[in-house]
Amino acid sequence: MPDDRRPREQRFEHRMSDAEALMWNLEKDPRLNPSGGALLLLDRPLDFDHFRAQIASAVAAVPRLRERVAPGFARFSPPVWRPDPEFDLDYHLRRIALAAPGSERQLLDLVAAVYQDPYDRTRPLWMFYIVEGLEDGHAALIWKIHHTVADGIGAGRIAEAYLQPTRDAPFAPPVDLDAVIAAAVAGADTTPSGAQALVSSAAGSVSHAARRQVGISRRVMGELALWGADPVRARDLAADFGRSVQQVRDQLGTGEADDEEGEGPGGSPLWRQRSRHRHLELLSFPLDAALAAAKRLGGSFNDWFVTGVVDGAVAYHDHRGVALTSLRTSFVVSTRTDEAIGGNSFTPTRVSLPAGPMDPKQRFAEISDRLQAKRRDVRGKGLLSGLAGVANLLPTSFVTGFARSRAASQDFATSNLRGARSPVYISGARVDGNHPFGPLAGTAFNITCMSYAGAVGMGLFVDPVAVDDPADLRADILAAYEELSAGSPGGSGGRRRRR
Image: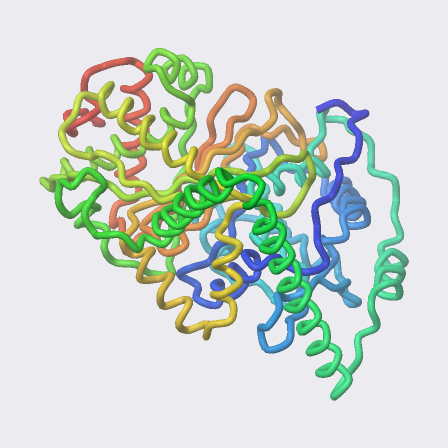
């Protein structure tokens, strides 16, 4: 992370995409909260004044960090982003001291608590919690950011604003945030009140809907004009449409309840219940060992990551005398083609994975093949943008009810991110661990990993009503990674011994 790195292009639109608006609406049900964040473990308390200066500079440079959401008219168009005239930096920066002894468990419970605390939807959608009082003089930073602001990759690029390559990095140049906010408000569309506000919002929504319909019509007419000159194009378009329909079916879970191999009902019989409660566990594993294991087994790092979760889940059930045939999960396919910060471009892809008795190498190969096949099926901008536009017109209670019912049939979700290769610092404190935590969105748990400074940091975010012993699940998954990486023959069938 060199000091002379150039500012990245920013990927922020004035109006939410249909997919972002869908996430905004789904969040009204706390069980479907689509947002995430990161827990950074520090070797010592950071310099708060230095950190505040860094964040002030970032807020001045990145408009989305000082914007709030303004709804569209009667949901006929997605919400828009407007400068927050009452922006208060100190509201977004919280300092917390843990009570003695300041254990890791206290810290992780704090993360779960702040995650479950809903956003003030009249303010910009991000928060920092600077945590002191940890054992051995350590500290932590909790970053909570709404998914409508950025996906995991976009959020990681925003984080470059407060990460430094050295412990003694200088202060950011001072900025007059009040002047920046005033200029942004003055330069934005004037906000009418009363009847004028209603007319303005309605006119903007109608204009947006009309532009979208005109754009669709132009693309259709242009496509039809090409069919006469190229008959093969129509056939290819039909094939692409068929793949898109299947992708929608996979993501919505509208297929049969049986697993993909026709082996009968799949999924965990233990993880049926759902709640809004959250519990966080951390895992860490050497990156070189993970990469070497993936190469030896003939697959990718993500194959190793997902296989370890499945193998750990199999062991968890085996210890309780419960047999599995398959597990239903999802993984995230990024559809980004730029290096910009912020924004969303991804597709959550559902897949059924083998969980019956199986040699670990065979399970790894089978999972690798299924993940690659699903990844090849992803088309377009991702995140079901077209379908989201329809869903946003439906009553929120209907959409959240449908989403909750479909998520209940999914066991867990995964996500895989890349971080800095070398150690980084935050206002004088070295980052000793970087553990992202991703949204459960109605599943039993989410496990998200990030490579950082030679390690793989993972956040195992669990619904404790679905998984009644999260610590045991953590131990089983960690043991699975150790066995996969060592090549030992205990990784499938729950034969491992953790104690």
